[in-house]
Length: 321
Image (cartoon, rainbow, N blue to C red; front, side, top):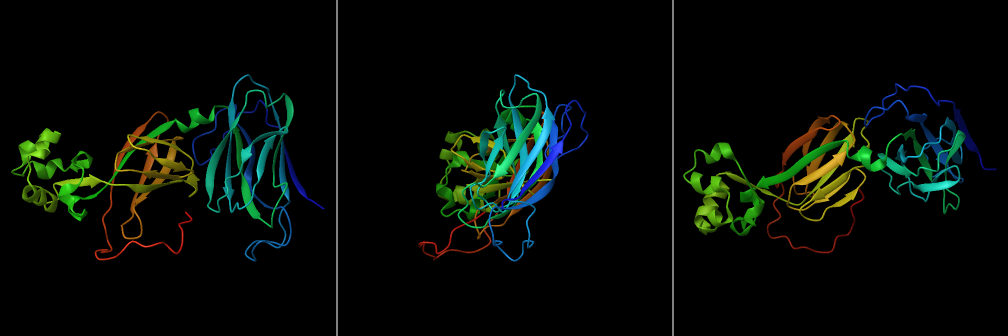
């Protein structure tokens, strides 16, 4: 027999003082649960590392609220999701949990006509499971603002670079993607050319001069990279991203080309990682961005594994994270 975990919260009209990992709750925000719940939609358990018995096969959270003519968003944390778990509020589907085993903080839009006066019910379930899926989901709040507005609270302007001398052949690299070290340039005989930062200035440099600039670490090149964003709880943090070149975004991860990228996310504390594959170093930085704040960050990486002479072949495994 299916088991449902039901929780009731009578919180309408109360001022909340709970603080979640990404941003502080407002007075009209509603905490549905501050716990993580272990669900399993069918037996037997997926792995022996999970408890023998789950809390329930689905989660139902009942709460009191007031209907308002404005959009809101649902914030939740999820872990170990490998099947199609749906999220419904008062019978209206908000979306599905992300099929991903990684711990992440994500958000769902809630239309202006979904929340009603009195008792409301949020349901998370997997109605047509293919096989046993043990998941953890919780720390759920109904936030009194739009999802996009929440994600635009704070801004991170980020570029990832490596030494120009690492690029082969580095003198053929797109010079529009070069960042210059002003301190070293001041002592360089190419000072007037480099400080001009005009394409025609670079164009007059011959290969030997460009080689000298690269080997003296006067310049670094912006390179394609993968950026990972963790919030204060160590969860992947959903965000928005934009750049002059196309970017790919999923919760907590941004794949960027060789251009600066602007990342929008809720105000809070974050750990930012940048890398470019197994042969490169991993850069890490901790930042705190207040609401309305803009944080500029440059992360240096460098090649640590010499792949000269290797041939590119078909990979035998694929990246999961």
